[in-house]
Length: 249
Ligand code: SF4
Image (cartoon, rainbow, N blue to C red; front, side):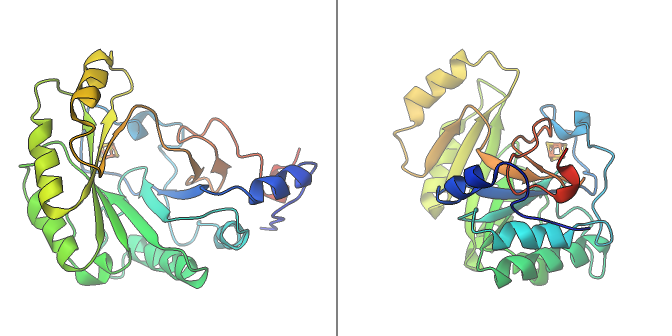
């Protein structure tokens, strides 16, 4: 596929945007997911049926995005499904993640993996510099063992919980994060009437400096499994920049 990084009438906008800092690239992979989270957005996503694979992934476009200088910070790999689901040695998941890792290394980016899978294999863990670990309850099976294992491998760790219950013990999770110097983020559930989330935030946000209450999504650019770059995770708004020649009307 032919890629022209700065094609079209927006080239002056592109160059002014290129001088901005803080644009993050989030690569969304989809291999399915074994969980049934009540707040799952992916399982109703319009690209839910697009599967990721080493054969269909557009490496040329990723090369173009990473070489543009537009993105900074971590490049993250997330789901759609879960990027570590069924990642056995030699699997398509493993091949694709290794290739993405090589691209990010080549351009000097650190890689961040967002997962709910507790994956203890060192060859997988060593692909990322940071792990964002989702969970429902701090006491669920293998969670604490997994994040402490990541810490022992010198990985940055951020705990990530969608806040769905008012009576959950959020302070316990914050104390655990503080004890091990992990970042921790609580996300508001989309549909929630968020009064109590705001109250929780007011009560706890000054309790620990590495704690974030996130009421809206991240400000990322999303490379989704259809190999297009979007401004939103829902894949409704194509990014105006860095698009492919084939997307120019
Ligand atoms: S882990 Fe992610 S993809 Fe899987 S059900 Fe939960 S929210 Fe959905």
